Image 1 (tube, rainbow, N blue to C red):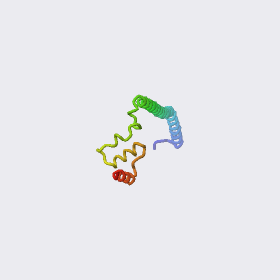
Image 2: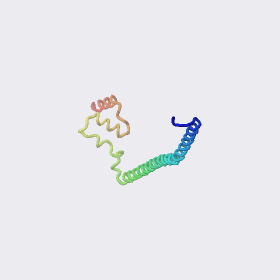
Image 3: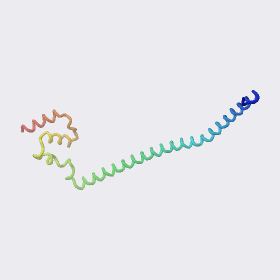
Image 4: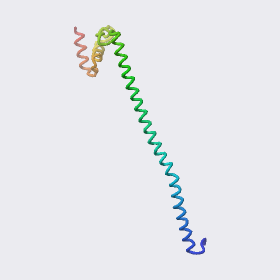
Length: 129
């Protein structure tokens, strides 16, 4: 028998319970500042990531505007570079099949060449002439 009396065992158990509660509260008090700091770091890291993405988007927008401005300036100085003024002279060579020429004309005017039956019909019509 470890204890001489029942009351001694009860008082030791109560002391252990009190000591355990005190230790838990001490541990909780020590952990709380670390938990708050890690939550704040996560929030700051998320905010930094969003700000970095916003900065990259603004930079991409700036360079897109800059590219557009330079292309307009280049076409104003050299209009022969514009595909609008070139016509179909570059397309109308003997190296390409008629189907490929029709596809290139569609792409020149911004129409995706997805309708293969239309392309083949137009190519057949052009070959007859």
